[in-house]
Length: 241
Ligand SMILES: [Zn+2]
Ligand SMILES: [Zn+2]
Image (tube, rainbow, N blue to C red):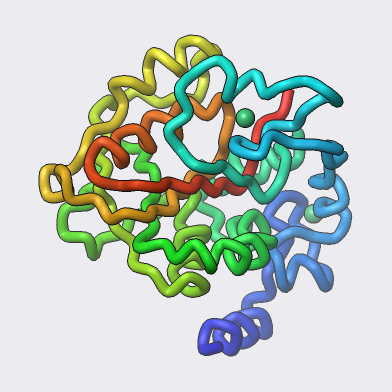
């Protein structure tokens, strides 16, 4: 509620312009993206999806993701399917730390999170993407693209944010080929010593984009190896071939 009042006041003195084209309209003031740019973020919804990883399925086919590997998360959900405009929104959010754009990317998350309420998660976790980030105090929360998603999860599910995962490799997944991402994911994260064998049972894992699923799958494996019983994944975007 307080946040809403603050946002309204900020809009009067510093109106939120579209983070892509700079226009101001009804939508940009509320979502950080103008109506015209929002229209370009829409993509066709698949008729059927895998029940586990939510990959779009052609009629009668089985899921190539879940069929070809051990899947360690219980379910992966995404708010939107990535297209050119959404890639641009995410890139700008990451490089310019343009916070208003995260309002748009996280819009739609509340509906999904409310549906997940019945699963009674114990905590939410952000997949760390930088090695240098200090998570040790648990208070410092550096800017990450998925921070807004984490805030929504904390508010709606009334669960704490914890950080049991450490980034152990400085390399990033972006720019790697499909197979490289799977090999690389195996040495990218490690369990924080404080959470070794002590992870809460039900975890919601948050990341900005589900591309090959290699990162969240490996993170889920580590969390389960250290005490988690179920891991659900939620991302802003999903890359669809
Ligand atoms: Zn625009
Ligand atoms: Zn699947």
